[in-house]
Length: 409
Ligand SMILES: [Zn+2]
Ligand SMILES: [Zn+2]
Image (cartoon, rainbow, N blue to C red; front, side, top):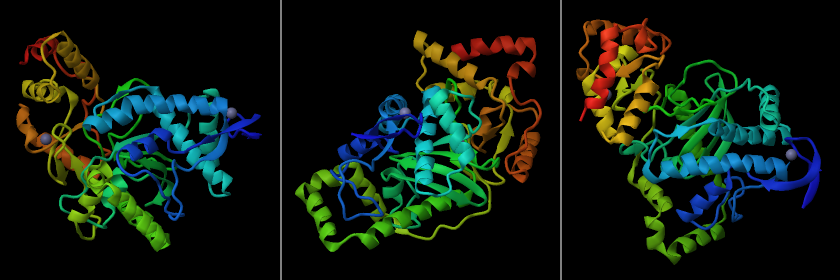
């Protein structure tokens, strides 16, 4: 037990040991890989659990634990079990992310480094006293399992993106973000910018759901993380002694079959099997179809408005079969929820040249012209008639839609 001033509530109390990256992440790493962890800065020391510091009193630590438990139960394990991205969430997700990122800023403050005082204090007041949040541009990106088809820019990409834990404040292309990367998740906040670098990653402080497609629309940000993978592992390799390397091999060989079948083993195999080839930033804009998630380069695709999307029977058929929404009571409710959620979507839809055949458009050249304009404005252009479909359809058409949605089999 150690007495001190809690960094969140500023009261003098007994302080608890706290992690930046939650404990359940380390538990997951142990259950799916090795028994010990090593840090890049001090790889010669095996640790049982992530790095800990005496930062918070028990009451404040308890508050953060609640957010962590919510995240573990509702996002972390459900996503890792079936790669599901279309997860529902509420304000607990934002609270969890802010609590993690705030601790990262706190570490900088303690170490006498730049800690973005304004954001730090805003988050602190929000976490401690539930004041109105000013800096709420926070994100979650699901990182997935596969990195590069058969080549990758360095030999550590899979190990980094699927397994490693890492937090930092990064300055990339005039943008500053604070991030925490763990397991197959990247959570981050924009500290200074209004650029639209991210699609589908925004986290809102209300009941919501992640959209189908997520991506970073700035090659330099992707490049930063790919480069980070190499730096972190190379740093560890440059510092680890031969004796400790032998210990790692010994641990693996104790039950090598088990290791190579584990998630950790598989990520190493993916790294070994992929060819190492440099990655170059392609200035061409890349984006993903909002329906089938196919990647596109400019000038592929079309831009559609919500009222154009929801009229298509083929579209609904695709979505319902993809999500297995049947026509029993539960299925119909899920269909209705989905419909409610997207039918007022204020942003335009990017549709690939394949999925466009689902739609019966009066003037498809116009939708093509829209995507060209969207590309030339780096994603800022919004055609008119975006938003709630009810404003742009006649009464008869509006009445027809619920019947159509319920009737698709
Ligand atoms: Zn406290
Ligand atoms: Zn598509």
